[in-house]
Amino acid sequence: MSLKNSRILVIDDDTDVLTAVRLLLKTEVKEVVTEKNPENIRHLLSKNEFDLILLDMNFNSTIHTGNEGLYWLRKIKEFNNSPAVVMITAYGDIDLAVRSLKEGASDFMIKPWHNEKLIGTIGEAIKKRNSLKTNTSAVIRSADSIIGTQLLGESEAMNDIFLKIEKIAPTDANVLILGENGTGKDLIAQAIQQKSLRNNKPFIKVDAGALTESLFESELFGHKKGAFTDAREDRIGRFEAANGGTIFLDEIGNINLQQQAKLLSVLQNRQVIKLGSNEPVPIDIRLICATNLPLAELANEARFRKDLIYRINTVEITVPPLRNRKEDIQLLAQHYANLYADKYIKPKMELDKKAVEKLTTYHFPGNVRELQYSIERAVIMADGESLQADDIIFSPIETARQQEDEQHDLKLSSVEKNTILRVIEKHNGNITKAAKELGLTRTALYRRLTKYDI
Image 1 (cartoon, rainbow, N blue to C red):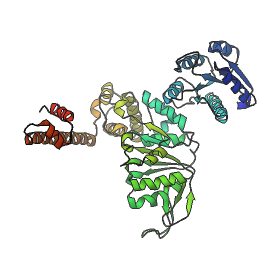
Image 2: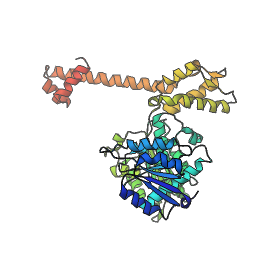
Image 3: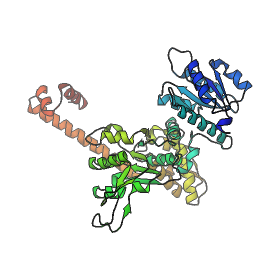
Image 4: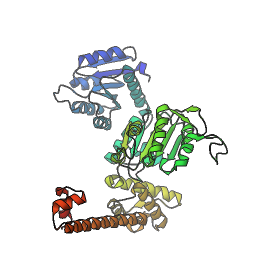
């Protein structure tokens, strides 16, 4: 069904909004029905069939929380073959937006809106509803929609990420993905590309942190023959190769300030200049970046340019470590068990109850990557048709790294304690003088005395 043949219901207690929407849509759709009182929703839906409802989030409340709209959204979703619902809010809070999407809304609009944007949003919502009738899923709310990339999860944190992907993928917004190593940042980048309008265009991944200073410009921007000793032929860079599509710069936090300045220039001007050339080459790319550094470290201007952060961070997605979303462990483990049973021509293996318990009580310092390798090993070594707890052995690499980190912490603690003792002894117990030499306040020194039981 096209927009021109659609019937729209608008529910808002603001008469001006109802009038404005009716005038805007009357030439765009088949019929527009307006209603001030949400109490009449049930009656209207029982007597009429609508393709979409524009629903305000706030009704007759001095404290606008959005809960009124969420309540009526649930009521609408109780109807069989319910219309698509686009929420209207003056409070463009992302958490509220995610919450309304989780409750079943197709999209949301923030007052005041641009007319073209509202019409476009309505059209997309109706298109989704029509496709829902022929497909079993229309919204990324679970892993099923993107199982091909193995981006899986049932936890609230992952459902929020799936919803964000659905929201931002069709745009050209730059995305920054944050998270520890092994959490699946590259899979999220791929999922954004697959759901984007550039999904049939190139997706170029670059490990930016692995590029040496001498290779950085050549790899990213290209070079002309003779630009340097080993430049035996012209070569296009990764940005030019991604033209029309998406470039994914992994480990962006590891590039130095000089490299950051060159990257910023390309992003601002939307053109690259190859080494050995003065001719700019225009580029049209969507940028996705990822880093295992926390945002607080990126915000340190001695390490990372603030103007570049703003350029790459239009939208931010933080991927939680696996230990903080234990609800996903069994789902992921069973997925990898099935995957490797097929690969190694073994019967399908279910996870024994004690195996699940062993997995869910482990802290997974290597995150999903460590889980994947642990399950692969277990499938290879298992003799039966189920994975037992004894079949699962966690990575000695991660265990050794953790022990090394703990030992390092203990050594640092010992050094600090012994230094404090020596300085206090040097000043014959005078805390003020000791604190001054240590570069601490008296209060900070007293805290350390308590910490080390001195």
